[in-house]
Image (cartoon, rainbow, N blue to C red):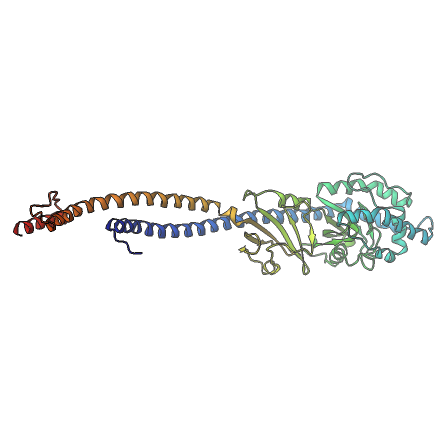
Amino acid sequence: MVIHSLRTRLVLFVLGGSLLPLTLVGWLAIREADQVLLEAVEHQLLATLEIKKTEVEREVRGLGTQLAELASRPRVVQAMVAFKEAFFAPPVRGEDRELLRRTAEHRFESRFLPEYRRLNRGRAATSGYLSLLDETALRWQFWWPEGEGRDGAGRPGSGGEGDYERVHDLYHEIFHALLGRHDLHDLFLVDPESGRVVYSVLREVDFATSLIDGPFAGSGLGEAFRRARAVEASTAEPRVLVDHAPHFPSLDRPSAFLAHPLREGGKLVGVLVAQLDGEGLDRIVGETVGLGRTEEVTLVGLVGDQVFYRSNRSREHERIGERVPGFSAEAVRVGQARVWIRRDGEERVRALVPLALPGVTWAMTGSIALDEAMQPAEHLDRLLLATLAVVLVVASFVGLRFGRMLLQPLKGLAGAAQRIANGEWSARVRELAEDEIGQTGVVFNLMAERV
């Protein structure tokens, strides 16, 4: 397309001369603003996770300190000795082993299994552990079945051994009160020689079993007991933390354990083990941080090659072995804070901050949708487009006015020349400006006089 009109050329020249630099400057400004905004979001995300990290570390270390304080109480040590003596006292009656086993199977089918299926999305629990219960465990679970839990501490039914019942009445209320006070799921007293759980507040199916060769010796509870039992008396930090893993007696809830040796006169008399409830961690993770409506904060950890996590975006927040979106196990192992944008699926700005806790590999991760994070930049984009539209209108108006001012004298010069060409020798340019076009008109008039 050939543009013959000088006015059109002038307008296009003015528009191009004004819009192109403005567009380039605007594009560079948007690009820089996007980068600055993204860096600000990343820094805010990292700062938020650092705060959460500090709170989680304080929570876990606080639980460890509380357990150490409990282990140092003479009354707790006395309870350990008393429960152990009563537990291993000769039984006052004999029971038929077949009756014990049938009772255990009935309780498993009628009580344990329905609750297990409810909490594990219909998945069935295996009863294989029943065949591993020896007569001691069967007898104690027969007379002292699973307790009513934290809200119903009362005395257990079904009779019981006399000495043990007396000791239980003396100490049970004390330990039961400690659960709610310290955000614990259960407390265990374990004999260091046999590994028997001689006392448990809730008396789940790990009660009275051996953590050395019993059915739950390989659980987190068993590992916590063995590691605490092996701690030397001179160790400055004797408490042991075992990371989350599914604990079958607790319906396969992911459970972490803290353990502390109990000593009397320097001699190891037992091990105090606390099964963490996780309410404190849930409270920390669940609190909103003000990043936006799409914010997500997650506490993740490595359990072997699997992943456990707690998230503020779901009430069903404990998982083992499930994939956490955008989570890299290697990033936790490396132990460095990092930020990245995940491109597959919903684009989200993600950050990870490892925690410094002995015995576990945990990290805080957080994310926010990229669209929400970049909303301020969208306002800038709209402002720039509005500015470009205004400049376009103004530049068009200026171009037209400038073209008219420039072309009107030229039209007069062209009209005079046309009249002379038509034989009108008296035609002259009448409006003479003082610029170059006006000088051209003066020269034209001189030429016409001499023709």
